[in-house]
Length: 601
Image 1: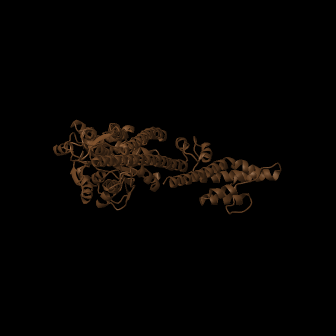
Image 2 (image 1 turned 60 degrees about the vertical axis):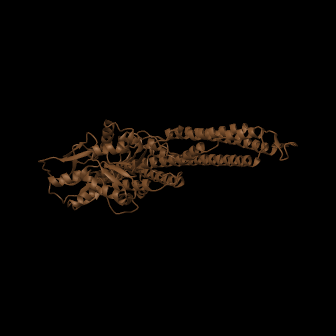
């Protein structure tokens, strides 16, 4: 039975423990954080439009300090959201992820002008939620409601089970807990023991904080308890030796890890060749069954056996060349994979780690082959005996047949190794392609957010520029990358003043009537707001299109205006056209990435 160490605080461990035990996994609870609510804190919710929670502990601490349950509550994940619902909060919404996902959810749902936000947290927090939201106009009060004290050492039971190799998995849910686990393990002198364990981490950041060497590292596809349990299910599922799963970042496979297989097979081939060379073709005297006083000298022709031995020697030489070629291809594949790994790494991201191919069955088969009885010394002794006594050739025939079978088995196993190498190369190629598509997709989302808000997007565009097939779109976006492009809301807000200026400038002329009309429009700004084909009508068409979200129609309505009006509206049209072209370029980038992901799959 699999044995798992759960490091969650005691208040949060019950649910995950129940889920693991339902899967037939034995659990040892080892809380590495102790939660201590602060006493005597009164939470003021006056002027607060919503509550933010980044942990179930924060939810429980707030419920103990305040009777407020009617404000909207936004939770970082489903576990925290479920805790809030059980505590009586009526309006709960989950970001189903991490602090960044919670920030995005708040920005979509709330307006900074409607009141401040209250973040119920601990003394130590992961991520800067308040800083992120403050940067986009929100006022956030972070109220520390509890302390979380890290464990200084492992419990006696945990220490004994880790030392005895009884723990198969350790489940870790936060970077702080991961770092704490590494510290208590090192203090106990058990860093070598955990190398036989699998780390199951809630996110890449958690896995990185663990810093120890593990037999395997499995990371949830998203930072939720449900996703982590899916990862556990994946670890429990039986897998064929050459089938790889994604997207768990594994422990890197050293380039030299396949060399012992070739060394073992080569050693076996050398042993077989040496034995075969020892079997010199000979003519052996055989005494007939006639009486002793009438001996008849005979000779036995061993040439058929000699031919078979020579055929074996030739096959062994060919096999040795094939094994040398496979070894060279393996080393070349390692070098190419390492170079490709370094090439696809992005700034601030961990380098791509190749998925491990399970070669343990092949190693065992080669080890068994090394131990199999291919001892040719008795055969040499029997050949010597042939020279001295009558010979029964049947046993020699049998042993030669066995040698031929052994040779065929070695050839089959060498072919299996070559096939494993081919599959590893294909897995590495697919992993690199997937990582490139994933990185580009995330960067595209960030670029879209920058465009929507009107902020500069130079950094996002620089990352995307490395993606092949979208060069024209990159050039389109490059012009405004450092300054950003006004948002649709900003363009709509500016338009009434721009339209009024266009109407005034259109009346300017040399005659007295035009000058009088221009002055009149300057004194009283009156503009017809119903669509039509004259200047006021076309400006009204443009404004209506903007309100309906149709930027393209607004640009068409403001084309080819009278000269004075065109000059007045030109700066606005330049911004609107840049916005229109940037959004189209972003759509084409998204389509190209989706097509690339489909081809890679």
